[in-house]
Image (cartoon, rainbow, N blue to C red; front, top):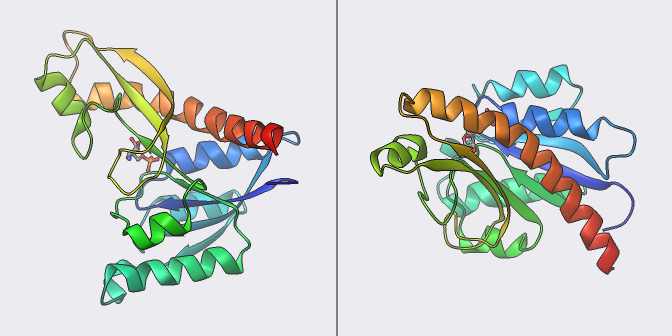
Amino acid sequence: MSGRVQTAVLISGGGSNMQALIKAAQAADYPANITLVISNTPDAGGLAKAQALGVKTLVIDHKAYKTREDFEREMDKALRAHKIDLICNAGFMRILTPWFVRRWLGRQLNIHPSLLPKHKGLYTHQRALDAGDRQHGCTVHWVSEGMDEGEIIAQSIVDIFPDDTADSLAARVLTEEHKLYPQVLHSVIVSSKAKA
Ligand code: GRF
């Protein structure tokens, strides 16, 4: 990866992590440009946020495609047309096929709201409470074929308080996500350049 790394963000919802990435990338010395946001849902709140920050958005509605792979081929086409080097999944709620994962292997990050390998999948905040965990947090990892199983790059930890609800915990974790993801994107690019 040389020059500023052309980065796309995949979203399905509110896009607050996407917003944190775009804002971080506005700094003159940040090593990535966020040049494209793709949402698989037409009503994702993140679309307006990206547009307000001057980033191009595309809706590729998975419901319009017969198979998961057809949908992914369309995403892949758009990513290549925009000369994307790296993908950040940020609240992107589609399971990816091995075909897509392999195509972007080593070039696709995800943020997950738990301390992986604990609590893969959904409802992580409630599950951390139900498990009696004393700590919770978020993880940025490389995307691999197993869901939420790719190599862990970094985590942020938050304490769980006795009066926490899934919502209060989610809010505390989300604040950490917004700091962690831009830092990790920065560091993976800088360290890949150091190795090149
Ligand atoms: C975040 O907690 C993310 O880790 C999870 O879904 C939430 C999405 O938030 N996968 P946002 O769309 O970035 O606001």
